[in-house]
Image (cartoon, rainbow, N blue to C red; front, side, top):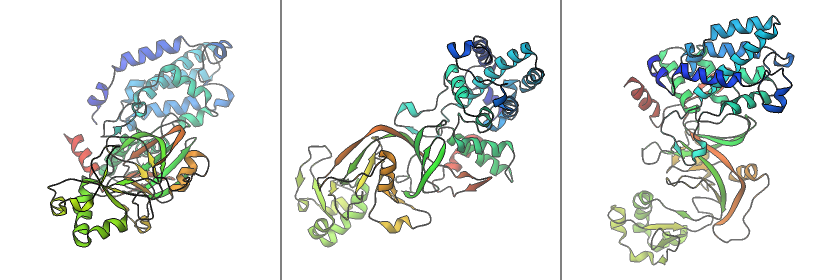
Length: 424
């Protein structure tokens, strides 16, 4: 991204900093007793804050690693103010605290935006947006260790912070690798910061991660969508709202045409009975079960006729014992699977777009905080989550691992597409 493009994002730099400074000036000094009564703001020069102020200055000086212009934050002036405040002058300290608060507000608000990389926001609350200045300062004030919070950019997702650090530290071998880090940094911009509870599915890694308090507490293998455009698992932010036990599986029309219809032509009704398929009259909730032999299966196989095949719960059901629902128009969900051998594959890109889980019962136990099992054989047993849990299905081909970066193949070609848009 060019510097001219950076300057055009959002409101003008001067106006943004003026707004932040005006807001910060209205906030009492963090040393003032009034702060506890009227407003929460970080205490930059308290003994417990260590070198938090210097760490923020260092971040602002390398803001280009965020795709931002460092001149926007005037890190040199801020460094001088911090130096004067460190000498113990109360007036200089108040000035430095106001300037640090203003810089933090401007920096965080600039980072928190929709990266515009093709993510489907099923729930609009999960679209990244600039927080209110009061929220930014209050969260920093609540941090157990302000220096650690600033250094790790606790307001952003850890993956974003580490990719950003890799760019700032030049942990890349060439410009192509740097561009790849920047592309993945932008995707990670849409992931959550803070200390919430959420799950991330990374399709290139074919893995699901469970997060609590900014840390991975568990992970498992998954099977994601195939590489053909119609089957790719999309990037999506949504709330998991309920679990369905003993689910039906509705075969997508292309799967019915290309895979199932030829088997019906070969084996007839016996195949449908053995696999537990029912022919339904339509796609509505009131659909009726029809005689499967009333259909011209040659026309179905040729793509000339579309039908709805529903698979009943049971050992052969493609959803397994449960599916995790975040209702969306793309028909994507997470689910159990009876096809265990796919979980053992290295690439694990074999689904029609949904995400198959290595251990669905374990994931359900994490979501609900208790074991979850069906009550009898009744189909479609719905179990609402007491509180919806955010799910982020992303596409990261560069992932931090300790002090290094692990790279994955660009199976869906999204890196190539995004690089083409950047060049354009």
